[in-house]
Amino acid sequence: MDLSLPNPSWSKDMRLLFDQFMKKSEDGSWKHLPSYKNKFSRRIEDIKVFFPDAKLIKEKISQAQLFPRNFEEGLGFEYAMFHNHAEDRTVCIFQGGPYLQGAPGFLHGGAIATMIDSTLGMTALIAGGIVMTANLNINFKRPIPLCSVVVINSQVDKVEGRKLFLSCNIRSVDEQTLYSEATSLFVKLDPEKSLT
Ligand SMILES: CCCCCCCCCCCC(=O)SCCNC(=O)CCNC(=O)[C@H](O)C(C)(C)COP(=O)(O)OP(=O)(O)OC[C@H]1O[C@@H](n2cnc3c(N)ncnc32)[C@H](O)[C@@H]1OP(=O)(O)O
Image (tube, rainbow, N blue to C red; front, side, top):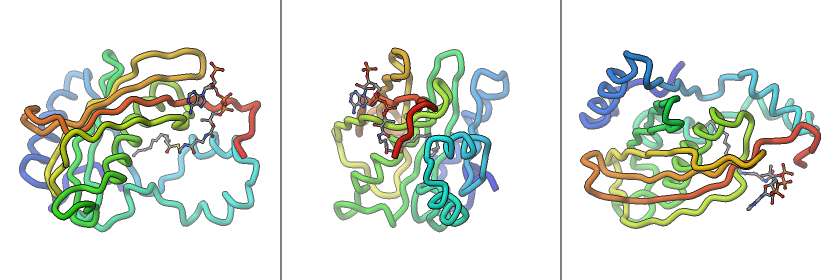
């Protein structure tokens, strides 16, 4: 089941943004990216190539769930991503639920980092194939209120061989507040090199 579609826990802002991007997707310039809890895909098969410890994969993979997708509806990460191919950028609309609290009333820094890593990761995956995060630098400029809706804008800045350099920022829906900004390095996995 695609968990990036509207559900009753979404606020008015979240639905409004989703509808705006779905409208933008009508001419094909933007594409809604579906998101599943544990849908096996070809990519999982690809990734197994890099993890020779198949026993671990075989035993555990059936329980595996995408981390941000394993909270009950509305309590954790509610988000949807849209990709603009021409501009090589991805937008993630994100509503962080009450189970993601850090400081009272605000999102935990690790929850913010999760959505940054996921959005940058998706952007890098589309641009470079099977990648992993090598480096992630985040500046937390303003605390993000719990249960508020924010917009993550992520883009590829430079590609050098297997290295993809990306950046993103997190802004309020009205774009007036800059909450966080991040830079990152993702590395495209080399089938000749085992990771473990
Ligand atoms: C919600 C939807 C989600 C679904 C969609 C999500 C998409 C997937 C995104 C996953 C995001 C994650 O969470 S991944 C989980 C967190 N990340 C990890 O666990 C990765 C652990 N690290 C590794 O496995 C490894 O270090 C790699 C794969 C990153 C790199 O290893 P490698 O392939 O052997 O490459 P290596 O030769 O070491 O390095 C290649 C080049 O990159 C440079 N390089 C490597 N690491 C660094 C570094 N930290 N800082 C600077 N430069 C670096 C090297 O200097 C070299 O440059 P030069 O000499 O060539 O110039």
